Length: 280
Image 1 (cartoon, rainbow, N blue to C red):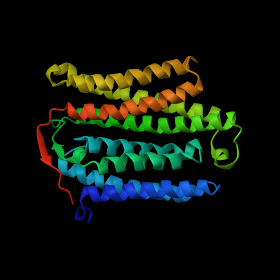
Image 2 (cartoon, one colour):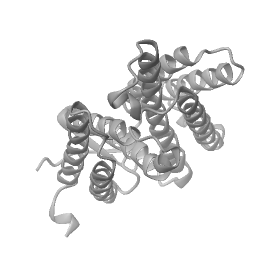
Image 3 (cartoon, rainbow, N blue to C red):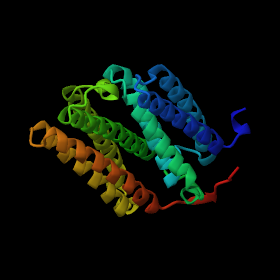
Image 4 (cartoon, rainbow, N blue to C red):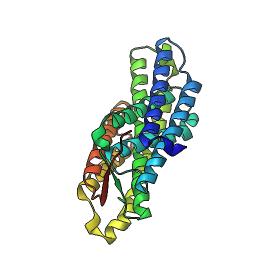
């Protein structure tokens, strides 16, 4: 049944549900009402299920974790952010997090789907049947999803700061968490993302040290740059040397940097097998 439709069909359907969730939340906020949390949550869960199906079919086609081109990297990043939101979103008790998460997921999935060049070829066997390298790649990309959720809380932090300075505390601004709560959430997400990326690099280094010829230096340098920037930011924030507002701006800019490095990561792979993607 699943294979009756192409993987891209499932992913388009998922992107559509994420977009509907975002538009529904926007409509509710513009009318001055509370975000439709339950409706958005249901749409996000449904979209997530469809995206998992699409990625599963893509994984079967390539014989491993679908991380073989820029399209798959963006899809996996969106999936990671949604996965984390579904696990911890309720714990954070922020009524607007679902709204912003649906916006992020819709943006990443639709942009990747709308650019055929990103999916013009897809590659098989890119991890050389090495489960540790595959685990390293999946862990690193999952950390990017965490950084995506961090960017959303940073945006909410900026909006809360603006609302307090401009004394606009009514309407949909009233649904934003306090600065203290948003700062706490952001620091925890930053710490979790840095820990995941550090673990990913540690796992990868075991293989790289045994076979230095397999190291793709531009890809490694791009990943290390992202890791160093986020780690340095975490250190400054924990020491109180990075004010909340600047911290929020840095988190937003660093996520843009992380997304830009995905192109470098994909372009500098040595792909043993590349096959055209079937468009349906």
